[in-house]
Structures are given as structure tokens and as C-alpha cells.
Amino acid sequence: IAKIQIGTNAVWLLKPMTFMNRSGLAVQQLASFYQIPVEEILIAHDELDIAPGEIRLKQAGGHGGHNGLRDIHAHLTANYWRLRIGVGHPGDRNKVVDYVLSRPSVADEIEIQRAIELGCKQIELIVQGEAQKAMQALHTR
Image (cartoon, rainbow, N blue to C red; front, side, top):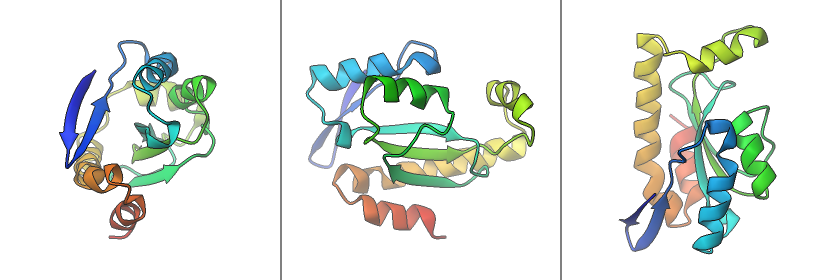
């Protein structure tokens, strides 16, 4: 974990040491210890249903079969924010596990990195409670 300052806001960063599909307990424990409301948690994650290079911000919703989000749902309510980073879909649900555990193609990796950079540029707005402005910047190009 790390504590950083974004504008006038203290922000806790967490990269669990567990497997992704067991990250919910770490998120819950950090939120509980530092009394962080679920509505102020932002989870950045890969999203199969979005093309590489695309990024979306949303609050609440289902886990959509994402095992990391499924575990977070089991430890928190579903009302946290998600920064959904598109990685694309292999086209066959039987290939999903190998696809997400493999390195993306060079072209996809460039697009994914571009999306991450775009998302990072909106973090200050999100932290300041200006999520709608961040959504507008991320969702319209």
C-alpha cells in the first residue's frame, strides 16, 4: 500500500499481494482500517467487453463474470467505482482464461497503455468528486 496526495486529497493505493481473484479481502481490510466508504473506492481492472484502447468509468453494477470483481463484491457492496480498461475479447469464451493470462499483442498493448494513460489524466477529477466530468472526458473522443 502507499499513501499519496492528489490535490488536497489523501489517496491510498493498494496492489494486493494475492491472486487477482482473491483481492476482495485486501480491499475490504484497507477500507475498514482507514474507514474509507465504499463509494470512495476506485478499482482499475481489465474489461473483456471493451476494445483495447477504450476506457470507461462507472459506479456500481455487477461483476460481469470478472473473478476479481466477484471477490470484491463478496467483501464489499457493489457501490464502488470502476475504471474499466478495455483488453478486448478472444471471440470464444473457452479461450478467455488463456487470453487474459497471456501478454497482449504489441498493437493491443500500445492501445491498452494509451487507455491507462488517459485514465490517469482523469484521476484528479475523480478524486475531487467530479466523476461526471471524468466520464465525459473518457467516454467522448
